[in-house]
Figure 1: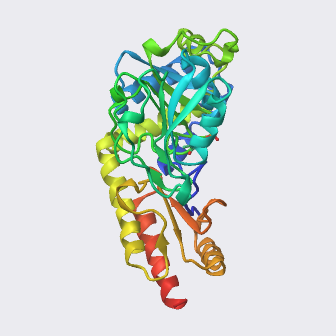
Figure 2 (figure 1 turned 45 degrees about the horizontal axis):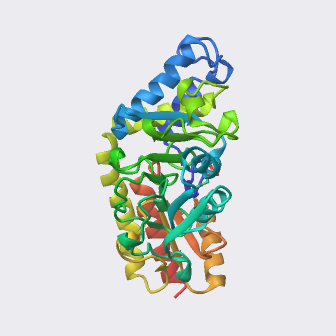
Figure 3 (figure 1 turned 180 degrees about the vertical axis):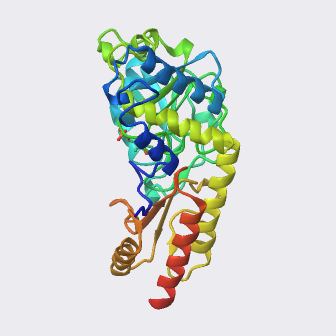
Amino acid sequence: MRVYNFSAGPSVLPEKVLEQARDEMLDCNGSGMSVMEMSHRSKAYEAIIGGAEELLREVMGIPSNYKVLFLQGGASSQFSMIPLNLMKNNKIDLVLTGMWAKKAMDEASRYGQVNVVGSSKDKTYSYIPELDKTTFDPEADYFYICQNNTIYGTRFPELPDTGNVPLVADLSSCILSEPIDVTKYGLIFAGAQKNMGPAGLTVVIIREDLIGTAKEFTPQMFRYSIHAENGSMYNTPPTYAIYIHKLVLEWLKGLGGLEKMGEINRKKADIIYNYLDNSSMFKPTVHGSCRSLMNIPFVTGNEELDAKFVKEATANGFVNLKGHRSVGGMRASIYNAMPVEGCEKLVEFMKEFERSNA
Ligand SMILES: *Cc1c(COP(=O)(O)O)cnc(C)c1O
């Protein structure tokens, strides 16, 4: 039996995608083999990776002056790759909104100076700080944000206006959740395991003029130019993860694309936030316009009751609701593949729990 999986990542995938992968497991498209067994240089595989890029460009509206790179090493490798490739003046601006931004900050600090232009550390990263444009450095090599903060359940309600300084954004937990304007960014990256497919694939979308300026000592595998020049085939790409990513994009396009996906995601988030805002037992930890559409942390204020809830939810088929250790309580991650029905049923279950534990 399938459960409702609220994992923060790796996370739920569309059932249709899993079924198609199952059907094509032993023989993909008449090739007589599994995608996992194909040479990445074969015609059959070229159609898969080429198709994935074409679909991603179409679904996200990626302009032709941006490269799409299918890499490995997780979103975490980008914390190093970005400064290695983009730093020239060796200084950047960064907004400190949580653990993932902190990790990016620490890696960038190895190579240059990080100017923190805003931080929400004082309140366990439960909000997005107001920014003052006059504190931005016009000479910064880039301006870094983590757009959706997976652990704390916040997201930037609007993008900072960084002028000519390229905006670099970690979209790991919100990419493909609603339409975005790619031209507002210099570089977008995401680990695939939240909204794009399985773990093992990292997608980088980078404006062409930002490629080719890597520091002299940058390892070959950490240069955007090498991967761009070789169509993400400098070495063996994560072939199966890219295949599943392509199926996810086909599913998303069939659904109506990002406009429709955004509508569905807002509806899902509303169902849960509306209940949390009115519950006398469960409290949301984030308020206002910076609430994430993808990750919703909440608490009862009583650790024993939290634990009891998580345990009973699991027994009833609502799994992976335990919050991150730094926030405590619970967190419902409701990525693209979580159906509306999963959110409705979770709220029904929470109401029942609230009644019987009042
Ligand atoms: C999950 C996550 C990461 C880490 O991704 P890895 O692929 O495990 O390195 C980084 N940033 C954000 C916002 C995430 O949600």
